[in-house]
Image (cartoon, rainbow, N blue to C red; front, side, top):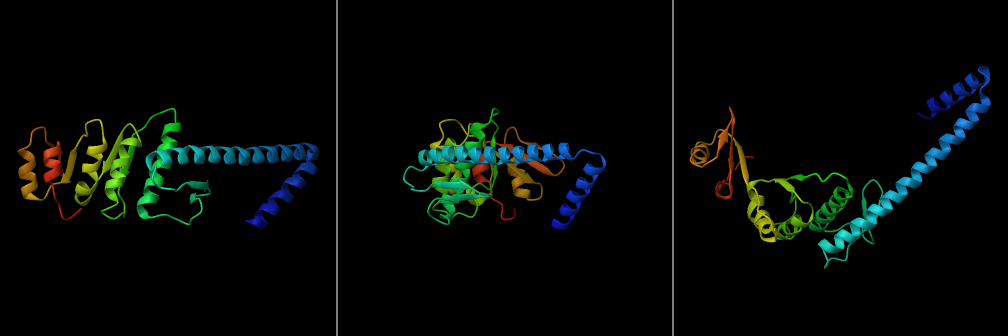
Length: 208
């Protein structure tokens, strides 16, 4: 890449000499340097401001944890430590993303697949309690093992009703039979959708 860049620069110099645009090329290069420097300064200013806002939100969400973001350099760098526990890192990631969402002119839902990640069971309740403070609307795709140690704590901390929806692929006979007994269920050629907390709490499937 370096060799090709030098050849391109030499070719541009020769073209400028032939077309008698050497002075114009010099001015263009100065302008490009100014724009490049402006981009770096803007990036540094934005990341610093986002860091500050994220740390403010982290202190509100986790007042008992003395942990904060030092800088953003391709990833979140924690202040004074190389990393935190799985629960702390996940909570910080949620707080950081929540900060970005709140800075936007458009309030979009916070959508997460398997929101507890690889955290231990004893950590999941703490994450569940954070969720209602992250966004106006939080949509989570969970598996059965996350239900008891996560969803119940979201419900406990949330001041607005939760919407429960169970989706599963057709195949398990007992689940299909039970689903068709529930009001407002719907089905497609290969799947069934059941709204409501009752079926949601009863549903258990070994295979994902």
